[in-house]
Length: 141
Image 1 (tube, rainbow, N blue to C red):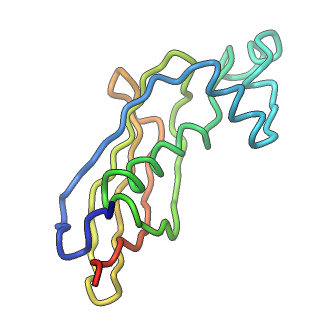
Image 2 (cartoon, rainbow, N blue to C red):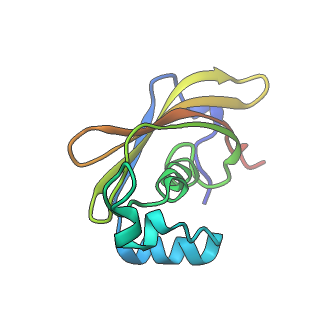
């Protein structure tokens, strides 16, 4: 299985992935990453923060961008080279978020793409925005 090669991709191409964030996701991510910040795990302590309750890890939510890039656009075989992220709103357990990537730059000579990356919640509010740089897979010879 191979994703789209650079000659199959145009400026403006888009792909998305949607997921409802669960408490299980937060606990698994905390265990894997070691990030056990009370903002994610302790209701009493998290209520004292600016968010007034528990929130999902920003990096957990932003990892859905990797799903879009690695599975859909360009897809399997893509090399993720870099990512700029800006966290603009919290995501809570139970929120349904959609990660979207849109091709905004294409360099066929170097086999590189830049994609605008956005994660929105169920209300259409942007919770993460940024840009990703990737190397799409090369055509099989």
